[in-house]
Image 1 (cartoon, helix red, strand yellow):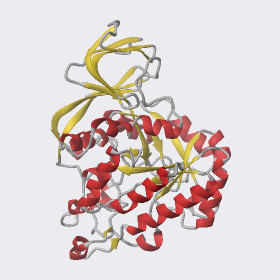
Image 2: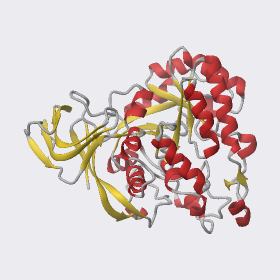
Image 3: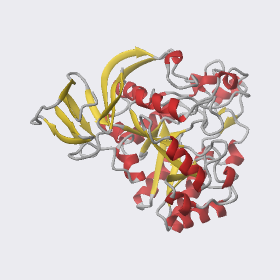
Image 4: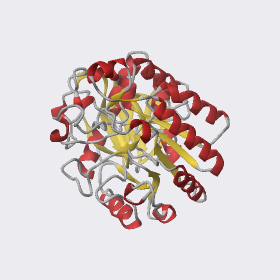
Length: 424
């Protein structure tokens, strides 16, 4: 299958950017899409696609690995293997490693480590030194070294003056600033969503307004400075009208949500299921439904896996003491296709939030199916039923709340730059 000419035959071609949804063939030559559609000529090696769909390879904008420093959690290589199995062809690695990715040398190191893997490894630089929230990093120099965006990890920038400076400084480089949408003064020390349910369980809850307050602040600062801000990991309905107002003003504001918050709600923590302990916490069913609708109408631009590997020892603890986080690279597409099968999510807006939208935000060529585009593709069966078994995941850590869950839709093949890098 490493032939320079490969044709996917009789396959459903889905391109969310152009709205393409047709049955036809897709021919790849020398790593690029040579032609596609009902009248595309078949040549080279054929891959039968009857009953399957092909879409641009997924771009996951929020992946935590352990490398460097915590390789027991995940290495770049194991994350890449998991990504390929999930149809992800490009992943943005978060800066919260040990040491933190806060200077040019570290950006360069991780970029080089990812060069020969089965996925395009992109690097997010830290907004502040050691992610201390106080000392600004050299955003311009890190961007020159290859940093594709800049992030605060799960520790939001608390100081409004620091955030203003970051947005002002980054605006001159057109750099994307991602800030976790949470007000620490309201959310620190909490372990669940603030609700009757968490009260009954005796768990300290984070109120949804914590998210809205941070979103309001960051949008106001983006308007003041002309900076580009990504409101990272939206989880509540409260914040959606705020985002809609910002977009109506045509501010450079975008928002992301994790697949976990589209597929689950607070009841999934059940009797203290630590594998469903996340940051931000799973919220109410009304929030989940509102987030799904916000993907469909374009209010939320980006879906991420929020892949956050944790060893068993960090999860098999009392709920309040367990680390938040879940692996998600392999389950990102399947969990979304399951929501589409249930009728809550529309196919093309879902794919747009994983392909052309992140590509546009990050300035990538990938994320679309068009003639001469790079052949980063995912081939999947929309309807295949299967049950998630955490022990079979390729990630080094196995912490997923989807363990034992019935899913609909599964990746069959992943192609990166014309080469088959995964087959089910």
